[in-house]
Image (cartoon, each protein chain N blue to C red):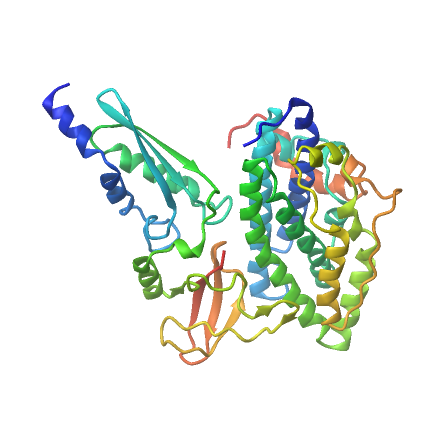
Length: 259
Length: 181
């Protein structure tokens, strides 16, 4: 196993924070549906998705905490919004619109699986082992959301139109997942953050297109522009602050409390 | 070292620890943690007249809420063995846990309780999903109660993170199936 040079610890932590922060925010958004999903099975499904994503985030935060000397709780609940590295799409609220929730999940889960498979090739063994395990769990999320894309895309005129509208509305911010993180080059050179096997954006778009085309839906996705939002650099949409306020409310009352 | 201590030392072997582990059930399933395939390694390290025991456990799902209870149960019960001075439980992800690790006894016990397990070496996807085309109804998963193949996937998510829910059209029972990880 390789040991991580000191000068790479912070950039490596930033890269892993992007993964963990995406999962924490998406998990929090998923948990909104507990008790409110359109059918009982989805109530359970979205609660399970939330549980999965938060468990994934926690395991990653623990790994990061060991690298930079803090705790998983402090990382999840004790940071200001500029210190988060999540992408714009996981911050997007769904206003309890099922089509929006499913389309957000579609863009995010496919990306998450690709990213985890990539990380499973890291020469940093604790990350590779964990990512390998997480990718297997993420597989179930991908299959679940794909089945919803097909069900609603092939459903009625109304369901197809609403799905198309949500896919289009989120297409502008979905590529935020691909915004670059500083010092990726050094981490790739050191082999701790593995090189993507193929162009990740193209792979992602092809995967999504295959499902969408099979569901009478169209996709229009473009790589993120250099003027993109900047979630990976700590520049966030207006939706993150209220989300953090709600999620961290209890922790912030007494940050040193033992649970 | 007294003769009695020599005897105790000899008694602490992997087998006696595994026998204890076989009495510990998974908190969420009617099956021992050994049959479930959670135990990856048991190491015994002599410490004076006693021994320190390290046990590697493979979590089924990352951050499974039952893990802490499992670790506590192991520490308590293995710690009661004569000659054991300390028990250290570690969670490891290499090798990753898979349903293939569940023993035949474990599979039989789960089936009796209405939980089926994907066959060893079967495809690594949720039944009903084949690449781009999702067929929502096909499953070919046998009902644990009546053995019928006329079953459908009700939900990929169930009462715990590792289980899915199926419905049998022949005997009209719902049953559970472990996720294929």
